[in-house]
Image (cartoon, rainbow, N blue to C red; front, side, top):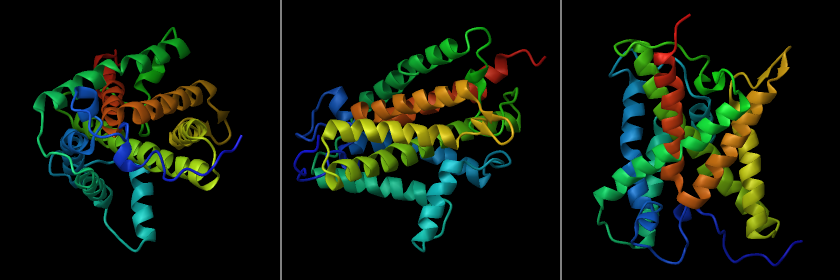
Length: 274
């Protein structure tokens, strides 16, 4: 049932993972606020941008669809540049922090704990893979690019896997969680005047479906829908959406990145080439 229009959107970029009632100085509060999210994401942004320019290795051969979509959005606004989505994210997080009027004090242990939390929260995705493919967890090495390959630590493919893991974690979370969930929630709650909880559920589910549809192999013309893979990506998208709403953009990116490292780099590297 509809209710009265809320006075302001409840999920704004500067409220990701935050309660909106002031800064909680504990770990869960600091890790979900813009300053520590920015510092957590900055190395990820730098690694991917270095990889995309070819300063290390031969550059990234496979472009990320999520990044392309963000670049095309900037093109529509008359702004050109492959690196503008990353620049925009940094600027937005800085502006968010300035708007909160909170301290610029950085707690290094928070950043280290965010890495540990991201690694821990990758567990449910691994369990999901095992459940959907109990005999041979082939989906564990499903690439966000065309295919996963066995990689040598000194090979260009190894660097490709690392760069693409960083880029997919960053840009897919930026597009499907930060942008899409925020926009959908705004439409459902502030335009259509539905409850906040309803807006969150609809935004998470629709963004998860869009996330699944983007990935290669989910639907192949002539072959139809890969049900298991579609289910995996949809449920993974729901999981990332819940993390985004409850823990913020930083943790959502961290979990996504670590899963992709496992899928693109670690697992291919230890599998028998035969």
